[in-house]
Amino acid sequence: MNEVEPLELGRLGSGAIPGISTDRGNSFAEAAAVCLDQNNHLSGVNLVSLNERGQELPIVWDEVSEQAKRSWGDLKEATEDGAMGIGVLLIERFTAFTCIERAPQGNGNDWWLGYKEEEDMEFPFQYKRARLENSGILQGTEAQVRQRANEKIRRIQSYTNRTPAEVVIVEFGRPSWLMESV
Image (cartoon, rainbow, N blue to C red; front, side, top):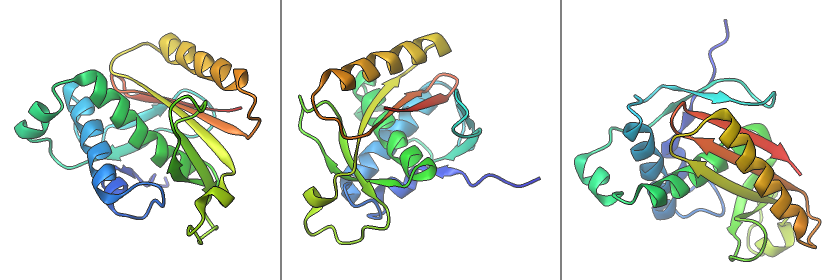
């Protein structure tokens, strides 16, 4: 049996993702780890796919300190940021894209995506090939995950921008994820 390479939250702070600084990436990783810990998960738990796009993926992170838990006392914020980080890792794992730039609010997406092989990020605006709309749920059902995905898809479709988009919903209770192309 082939072993599945785990999603490593530490990659978010490695500087390897063009649109995410090491500090921001470490913050996303810590937020995700706090949410997983809040739901009594241990590093290595399987992140369950709710569609055919991928399989169950083990997700690994460093131990969550008491200080980190206190720092992320607002679990709504932790859920949003943690899902953002995991969403970016899933995009890299299952698409040809990587995160190149945070989109401003009101733009119809959270992140701009570019192809992984486009190395020259001196002018990232030239490489905006797709959009990422991301959301997180601290504890929810599969039906709630699908409902949130449908809301995000409708939102994306309401904008005049017709650049392709990916929607990623991360649910920390099971934990699970759903990715849809728009």
